[in-house]
Length: 69
Image (cartoon, rainbow, N blue to C red; front, side, top):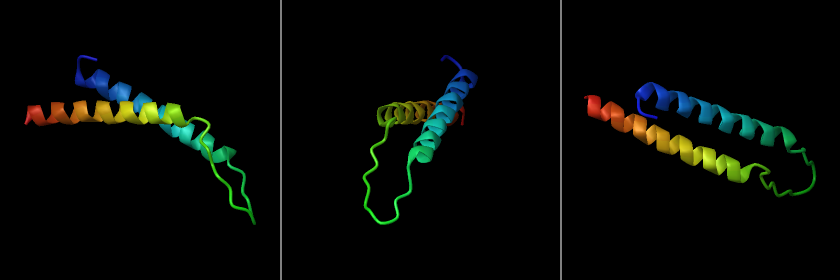
């Protein structure tokens, strides 16, 4: 990940994967009309890892943009 283009591509890929996992989780929740339910994410760990990766890559991209100014 040496240049901005590669980092941006990796960021977009990780963000798309995170969005897919979130959508999958949302589809698996069954509506409940009269009871309280607790939702435990099936992909929680993966979502946390991807979220951390996106934050890290975004930080790098922001630092690169700041250094260009």
